[in-house]
Image (cartoon, rainbow, N blue to C red; front, side, top):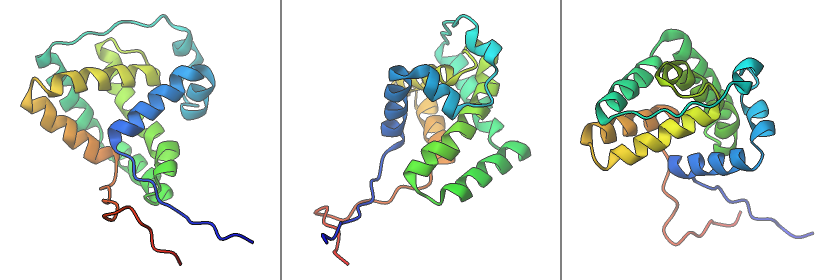
Length: 164
């Protein structure tokens, strides 16, 4: 019998976001139903609105999103999801990302973003675009990322994983 080597894959938040975006675009309906089972079917059939925000508006919305994570009910939901995920990136995508998406959706829908995962992705792209132009948005974006993901460990130099 061959021995199999187990490797841990560490993904950055941007990589996870891109992975989620690609998967969503490939099979958007089934992925959205799987990741966001609490989404209203009425909202899913609503026409998508194109939300565009200025730098100032983006700062306000990003600040509100960050504050939403400190609301006791939301903080408890996130903590429960994190504990269930046990720092496993795959489980983080399955358990933490949907809760974080729902929390963000509650805030950003008031600013014209749709109430599906797609709205959160569009908001994330907008924030990413403004990060290079505005240091305050860059700092708030880093804070939001720290709320969503655990600290990522750096792989060992050389990439070798000791055999057991």
